[in-house]
Amino acid sequence: MRTKSLKKNTINVITLGCSKNIYDSEVLMGQLRANGKEVVHEKEGNIVVINTCGFIDNAKEESVNTILEQIQNKEAGKVDKVYVTGCLSERYKPDLEKEIPQVDQYFGTTDLPQLLKVLEADYKHELVGERILTSPKHYAYLKIAEGCDRPCSFCAIPLMRGKHKSTPIEDLVKQAKYLAKEGVKELILIAQDLTYYGLDLYKKRRLADLLKALVAVDGIEWIRLHYAFPTGFPEDVLEVIREENKICNYLDIPLQHIADPILKSMRRGTTQAKTTELLKKFREQVPNIVLRTSLIVGYPGETEADFETLKNWVKEMRFERLGCFTYSHEENTHAHQLEDDVPEEVKQQRSNAIMEIQSQISWEHNQSCVGKTYRCLIDRKEGNQYIGRTFMDSPDVDNEVLIDATQNYLKQGEFLQVLITEATDYDLIGTPV
Image (cartoon, rainbow, N blue to C red; front, side, top):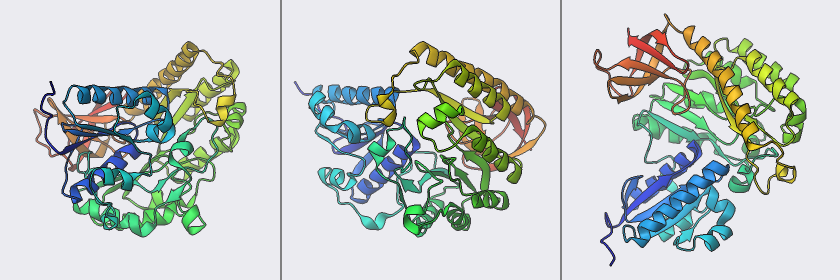
């Protein structure tokens, strides 16, 4: 017998994957609420919308498991409808419809108006920038472009997100003003590729112009840059980072590898020499810049010599922040025609070896922060600690500053000066000044 479903006519949005998906879910929820719909994020509702990720194997597996879990809930009478949207759905819609037909409907990454229609809501064009934030209200992601024109051999993003499409500067400023009015103090700029911003709309790279426009928005105190592609990096951006106090001296620049044969096969459009020169320029022009990168190990044809080159380069470059992933063999990508010839255990060993090197670099960098005072933004309280961040750290992926909550009373979303008294591999411990 069917049990009564929970929270009648409440739409529960479940988000998987990266910050771009978080942004998309927030826009969807804003549209639903503007249509008078009851909407929650990852709580309970009788209508479920799953915003999936389809980037690499682990993400795809998590997305499929979440769909199956919600189908079970539907069959048990706990939910009435299950809809699936996002990257996995965009990429594998025919397969999913065949394999999991119990889903009420599948939607792609650009099908927001159709999804809203099925949820009995209208797409409201006038709601530019209006979202329901799922992050703490003092920071928000600002997606400045969608899609990617880069030809990277390993990447399926163009299959799921299409060609690069910049959002006009005036629209982004409008969004930033709305967010500032809602209490947002930190904007985290995201896109598949920040470096390309403006080329399609303005016929030239205009990331620097966008930054100058966002700096002028009252209430925004920090602006952080994520996902800048190294090839063709617009160097006028460095001057803006250096000159404007609101822009964090922080840059996330995914480099993926450094051995020339691998870079060539990956179709990255650069070399070890050019990349090293670019990073040198970053550090010369913005003296205390913090660089975050991500690397892929186990790419087809990666030899021990290629891996040694990468290891030595990581030691030499001393990135303040670094993440390492094992290669995922993705169908319909250019690299899929290559043999996935590095065994899984070797991929994992290589990833562990890189992260061991990074752990030591991170520890040494953190020790150098002891005795210094940094401006920190307080994100949350956990048990007996407040958790904050310096300009060097992005939420969820980077280091945190831990402050004793039994000795201090602090507010979420406030900035304060913190003296760093101790440090571990990946965290700083401090006391307010």
